[in-house]
Structures are given as C-alpha cells and as structure tokens.
Length: 158
Image (tube, rainbow, N blue to C red; front, top):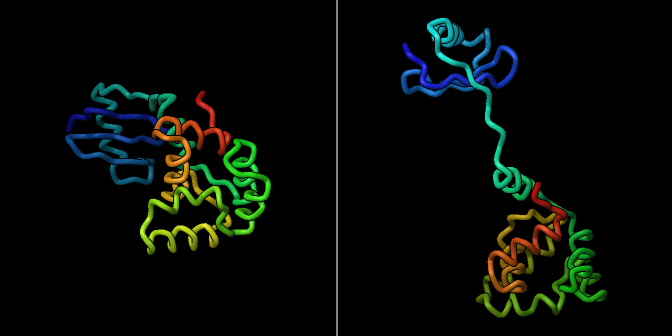
C-alpha cells in the first residue's frame, strides 16, 4: 500500500490517507499502526499539520464565542446601540425599543420567537441567527455586521 499523506499529529500519533482511505488518531493500539509504519519504512514522508491561516483562526474564534446577556448588553451600550435604560431592559430579558427596527421586518411568529429566544437566553452565541440579524439590521451590511460582532465579543484578528 502506498500512502499519499501521513501527518504526525502528536508523538506516536498519526493521521494518514493511505490508498484513498483516511484514518485519524492512529496510535500503537490502532489496527492501522502497522500499515502506517510500513508506509514510513517504504519511504513515505511524514509531515506535520500546517498552522491554520489567520482566517481559519478568526473563524474558529467566532464559532466558539459566547457572552452572557448582561455583558452583551453592556457592550451594546458602549457601542451606542442601546441606551442605558435599553441595556437594563435587555439585560433583564425584555425587548428594548432599540430592537424594534429588527422586529418590524419579521412576521408575527418571527417576532414572537425572537422575543422568547432573547428572554430565555442567559448566554448569547456569536453565530446565533437572532444576534446576526440584529447586527446586520444595525450595521447595514455583512462586513460591518461582522466587524460590530467582533467588537462586541472582543474578537481580534491575529
């Protein structure tokens, strides 16, 4: 068998694509260990995982980002999106008047669901559709909405 790719992911741990089959976390205990070792002995090079690009790092940060509702409300106030009273209302799980523009674009079920989701949320994920829609409605375009969310969640490119 020939290996097209063998990657050392940790000491004595490999990922490999051998004869078109992809295996992950191959260790001494794996039944594929000997196949990988034979391929290495036959001269197949062993690589190391490439470092993620700055865009991949940023995407991973965004995917993992969450913030508690109170901290988000403070950040929304600091960004000028919510007034002090609006931030207090929102932190309690109620719907502040500053979000009314967003609700106007939804049908009755959408308005109900948005308000219930907000009221029930103790933490808010970066990628939550409600937050994405509010950011887009406030910012005006996708790039500015992403920049706004990055600011609110304290995410910076490296």
